[in-house]
Image (cartoon, rainbow, N blue to C red; front, side):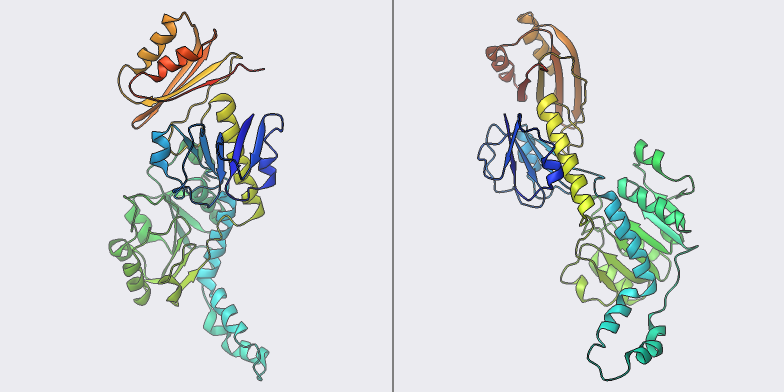
Length: 391
């Protein structure tokens, strides 16, 4: 019986995918096999030796100590793309909000509450203050064409925009799904100089921190609208405020407001609503649960942030999964232990990611606890787990 500990309320549709005869799910377990989490911080949690996996029902994993988990052989999953449609819809909303001054107009109209003057006349008199261009026929530059950026590009094109995309690392799956009418930018500089609107969809890494800065702003059109629904920290705030004050940027819409951003009149601060839909919460929970189940029951890894992707069909027998440092002769040492005990390997998969390697080994013969312990003594081994034969 596997024990799954929850650190937040996880959508019931996902929880119900755990079969009652094989799983127990609760928030109070002290020695779980796996953890399901949304926003709760795990940085100060002591992980027990039995813990095998952590799944974040969402994309960001800043609340999980990744390096610590890797050292202990704990696989960390996230759910990229599960909330993609929800974020896409919010980005499309921001296109209109950044253009038409709808947000500012509503705020002003609400301020008229309680006035003794005729509101309908005031509205007709002042509505010209909130004018703005249509998005039809304008150029949208999408930087990053992953699950969300791809959906944004396709949707904006269907609304009549010219869409230019830039992503030097676009995946094959995203490329297949991208509309044929989305243009490939000749360069990032070309995208910045051509776009009336720019939407950011890149991860926050050391290489992308303050990615949009004075140099990038100087390459943009005057009056450009900029949207960041990817991660806070991608835009240099000081340079952004200079660009807003000089009207190089006419509006900045972000899902990551802070004390400085909420004070600027040309910033539309959205309270991190990207995944705040019931559909998104369900999708994330289902995806997280399915990934944990497949790992616990089969050793397969999909959408891990610290382990390599590895997926091999079961042949019905017992399965050995092993994580080790990615150094020479590891596979030979592991298979030698099995050969010395006359244990035949039916199938095997070896994958690596940076300094970590992961092996799935299907066995034709039984393996004893002593033999497993012998594999654990090999220098460089991080984790060894035996998964029983399929019943």
